[in-house]
Length: 331
Image (cartoon, rainbow, N blue to C red; front, side):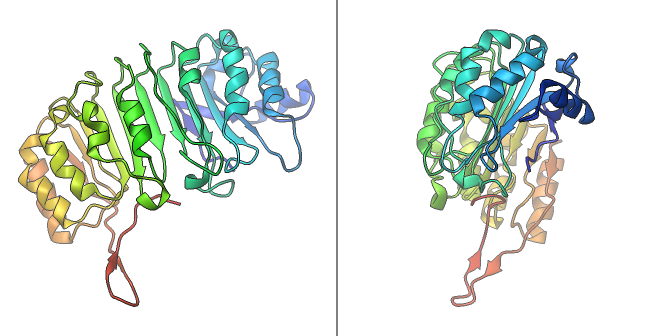
């Protein structure tokens, strides 16, 4: 089943696939939604091919006819049949065609798909730039998945004046996608959250791919930067310490990845470079207990709130005895 219960500060209500209009309305109300008050929830569109239900285009058309979409502010796009074998275009294209029916759409999540429907690294995406361009008042976009069997994420947006928050949750973020994002014209962007994942699943993003972001030139209003679920957090720490963007950030999120004592020592040594932060999130890490206390002391001493929860121990290979580390999400 889909995982989101809340999005954009609103409870998620699923628009039913199948049934008469009266049956759909009854099922919506059973979830706490009201087609006459559509701004009070985030609406999830989701279809399944087992058993066959209405197609994505028909599902969108039903949604537009039953719900007063002129007041809808948030949409969540869930499973679209077989997410590993096809991208979300079946939802995106009719939404683009009827963009004028959603004039107040501000927040969209593409890929509310849990592991029972598809592993993270298998979720196919596509070119989302035309969708973003079709909704010039869109302020928040979150995307789950990058490259399944049939579709690869693309996201170069030449110009969009309203987008303030962009999140890409992946088990492996290609450097190509990072470069597309970094070269996009998003002057209002304040929140950029990238789940880099692991190289085995296409995660080859390096600091050079995000060079315009790190210099502060790409997104001058950026206040939150997330380099999350990353395989090489230790290598990112010294780069971020030298990056001009660090001086503008209020929150730096390096959580869910592989941070060891090497990266911890770099944080301690360069804590002054992050003194402008309010928050530093390191949860899900592999720091030793001693290093946890050293990092905590270094950052609390300069007034930065640091999350060091979820300390993990490496596993050891049975054959060679080498330590093995894991990001929170990969496959």
